[in-house]
Amino acid sequence: MNYDTRIAAEDLAVTDSAAVLMGDAEEERQSRRKLWIIGLAVLAGLIGIWFLTHSGDDAASGDKKSQAAVVSVVAPGRGTIEGAINVTGTLAARRELPVGVPGEGGQVVSVLVEPGQWVGAGQVLAVIDRSVQVQQRASQAAQIDVARANAQLAQANLDRALKLVERGFVSTADIDRLTAQRDAAVAQVRVAGAQLGVLNAQLNRLNVVAPAAGLVLERRVEPGQVVSAGSGILFRLAKGGEMELRALLGETELAQVSNGVRAEVTPVGGAKTFTGEVWQTAPVIDPQSRQGIARVALPYAPELRPGGFATAVIKAGTVVAPMLPESAILSDNEGSYVYIVGKDNKAERRNVKTGLVTANGIAVVEGLSGTEKVVLRAGGFLSPGETINPKVVTK
Image 1 (tube, one colour):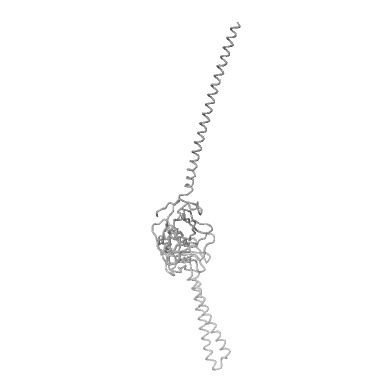
Image 2 (cartoon, rainbow, N blue to C red):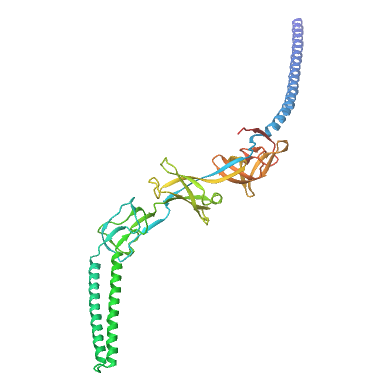
């Protein structure tokens, strides 16, 4: 029994020793694994640091390159530029003649003209009923006959008295009285004649006539209508049929236009272009819109209808200067300016003065010689001294 117990104890001891040995081996393997993991982590860290270091250098180099913004530039040179100002406006009669009732008026008997018809100076446009005025004139003509008869009688009485005064039958006082009667009768003849002249003038003014030769633009009266001096305009005429375009221009453009310059006018909806010339520019500028009117004289044409809308190209002379697109010219409180490529590809601000505006661009009359490289667009995002990467654009 003791022997078996000792054997079992020895077996147990052996078993415990084996377990201890196995545990030590496992712990050694785990330690070795941890060392490998730590070594790999350190290696990965070193590799990461190397990549970060080199990629930082590359990124810095890339940043420096990316900071130089790529911009399109052009050397505009100098050339002869023909100014052309595009404007819009309204067609109208150059000299519009409003015609109303010149006299007392009355009922319209007939209207003799239609819109679009040509009339001469003094031509009757409308006739007003004159039956009452005709009777008044006839009555006044009879009054003249009565006055003349009275004057003749007074003259005869005076003549007889003058023959009797030598015989002493008529006194000097009677002669003076008869002379005064004769003079009064003669004066009555003149008064009656003047009154007849007034009636004739009133009768003639019953006709509505054209004050000058021209084109009838509008008729506002019909037969049977009762009109008077307060009835307003009955007809509108265009004197001589002459038309004009009243074009609205900004104050800068208006300063470039002078009387006599040529203009090409095209009515809206029409394909035909008419040639005219500026005959008047507004002496004042509207303070709200900052615009003024240039009036372009045009000959008569059926396509030019007053009140219609039209476009025009006004020739504003020529100038020798660099030409730039609108996108290249900026402005602020100091005025207009552009960006040019300076030393070491640095953006440099250059103040300029603009001139003629055309469909192809804007003339720069001061500030550029034409040899500079000017930033075409995106100048609003640049600042003086900023490094740029210019790309020359061929015009």
